[in-house]
Length: 76
Image (cartoon, rainbow, N blue to C red; front, side, top):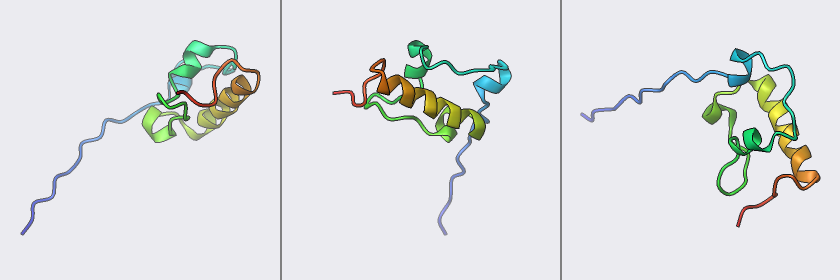
């Protein structure tokens, strides 16, 4: 009989909900970079702990910053 290990997960919380952020600014590059991987992809909400509402707004802000060349599309 095999032993199965349970993975212990830490309950993540939405940083934007706890800080009561009203607007995620696309010009705040320092904050947006923390939600990108080293390859330039947007991190999933289950990795960052964001709620669905704020994850959608964050994704739109990252896309806007990319379109006006504040963030790169791909990191080399």
